[in-house]
Image 1 (cartoon, rainbow, N blue to C red):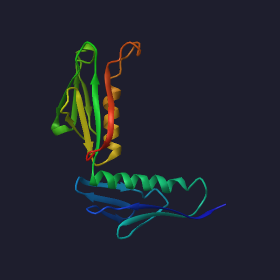
Image 2: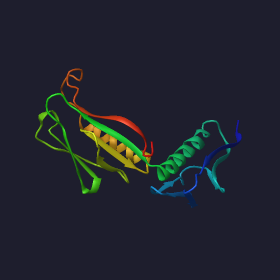
Image 3: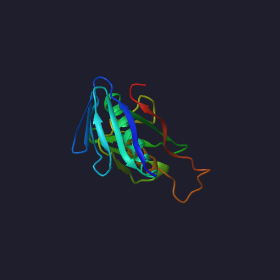
Image 4: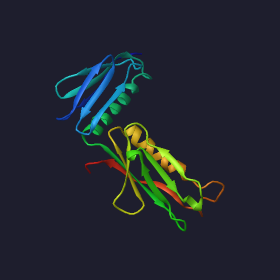
Amino acid sequence: MRILLTEEKVNIPEGCIVTEKNKILTVSGPKGTETLDISHMLLSVDIEEDALYVRLWSARRKETPIVRTCASLINNLVVGCTKGFLYKVKAIYKHFPITMLIEDAGKTVIIKNFLGSKCDRVIKMRGSAIAKLGQEKDYLHIEGPNMQTVSQSAANICQKCVPKNKDLRVFLDGTFVVSKGTIDQ
């Protein structure tokens, strides 16, 4: 059985501009500009004054969740371009102090002295994500307008600092995501 219309509404706040051309959405705001390519999705996107409607006509039950997924991706872009996303990563250690350095204007993070190792771990930020050292000791702030690139960059930092061939109940050293949210919070 087909569902005639599946629709989701995304509110567009003031100061945010959303344009669409050939199923490529461009969201501009005070924190930056991001694009989203939805040409592979069988959806129609209608932009009105203060809202954006994602519609799917005559779809089967298994095809309808793509509407909510697309609306969530667009909403994340709108929130990111107006407020920005912030992930806080903390280096936790018992004996060997972990040192985090920022290079290339926040595009590269270098982690030194993890479990006393001599080799440095180099992590590149994805997309528009930028890393900054936090005000507190051993904190790293990753921020940007795109939630996917910010969260993936934080996850890459956490995955680089996992103790190999050791008991994880004893060796608790590493980098961990402590908080996530928007910059304005």
